Image (cartoon, rainbow, N blue to C red; front, side, top):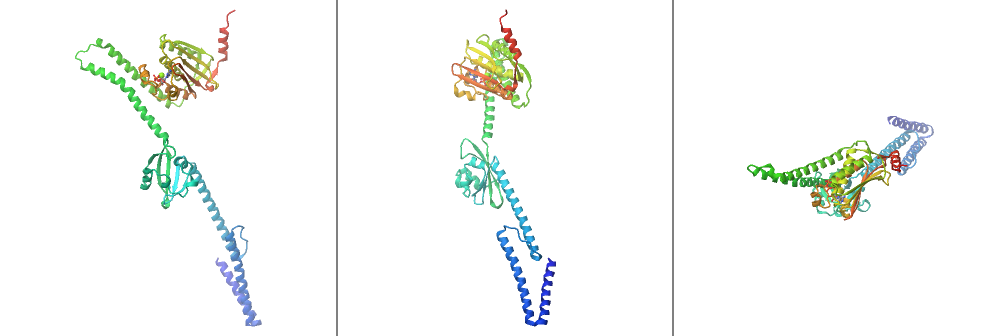
Length: 446
Ligand SMILES: Nc1ncnc2c1ncn2[C@@H]1O[C@H](COP(=O)(O)OP(=O)(O)OP(=O)(O)O)[C@@H](O)[C@H]1O
Ligand SMILES: [Mg+2]
């Protein structure tokens, strides 16, 4: 800059010297005229450059023209700073845009309020949770739109540590948890979380504990009652109490069965890896049929259809337990003399399926979707009398989930039921040779 200053000064001095020479040669007035004309030319030049700069600053469209000297340097610096400012600005705008995009995609609802609690911005989750719309509600007072008294009081308290739980204003069957966060300049951010699933899980946990306690209380009360009666006796003779001891044993078995089922369920839920046994479905079918016959004690007509043969990959104990649960139910809920048909056949999806069809009591349609819930029983009294705890089908469902399969239930009240455990195609290999052999052995001998 200093260099330019000296150059300007030198130019002025040169003009003054030249004007003095002209004044000496052609008279003082000619010298003055020359000096003034020179000054005028310099002013015009500067004005022109200033006008170019001003017009560029106004429009900022084209690049500034290049020029020499002071102005060249000024143009260059202005343009360079402007470019830097513009790229900084663009980057800040991009960052802001990206930040809003991220906030917009958050599963949590975000509403930004100004210092007077007017809506500045909100994301898609907040629209869904709170029924607000960015287009319509921007600039509106948040507390005018959501008039829930508890919400207004919570907002007025402004406590960022206090969480508010309330039903969603959109649908009352969903629950929200709201939290406040303080932003600069008196702004606030309302964060909403959909906690319906958490509440449901918590309810399930409480129900589960209540159910287990209830199931355990009855047999324990029976056992404790007898024990107290025995304790009060002077010289009890064990032979006199055969019936009571039998009942106590029955109740103890009940407790043990319940604990076994609970442990099975816990194991199924927590075990991520699965044994990969090769199970011959024909042998498994026969084993189940034998077991079913011994359970039924000749009270039902039991049969097994093998429409397909092959090898099923999976956990043998789990699959056996799931199939036996279905068979035990069929025996338990089919009156004496009823038919129970077990079958293995090809599933429509390409896999293999094990079905248990009975001609038992059947189930009314409204119970079907809830049958695989833990402790769900259609008729509590009857099921408990027959020793059921209501965990059997929950275990079946988990075993099938473990094998990427599913349970299908069809039933006609008072007529009978059909329970089908479907296993996916990738777990089953059809044994063509064995089928051929079976067919060959089925041919009458010549
Ligand atoms: N084949 C069936 N016919 C009629 N009702 C059935 C049949 N299978 C199951 N149910 C109904 O479904 C309910 C749930 O069955 P689940 O096997 O889960 O429990 P449970 O048999 O009562 O007890 P658990 O199997 O734990 O000993 C039963 O209480 C019964 O009401
Ligand atoms: Mg059962």
